[in-house]
Image (cartoon, rainbow, N blue to C red):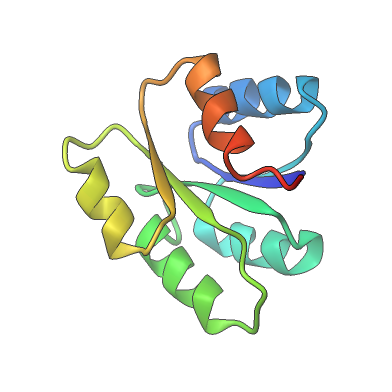
Length: 117
């Protein structure tokens, strides 16, 4: 599965990338929403792991602009440490939420839920 990680914390992005690549996924990483839009168009990911608070373009604007583009659209999983994580996920019509901090097994489980058979 091709996964787009949109995360401005380089350490988190690197850990998630290494973990998913270790499971055989093809991973691309963007540090902000603006770059993520370009990568989404080029890479056509099967899943997007989206941080909400980022410089240049936050998760809300990214999700809106991504969905304005012609589809198909990958499911979005919001990654956030916010206490109101579920509300934030609903605001961007995300299919799931992954609360920070999360363990690798939680990450694997969420991604596996979107894997194509």
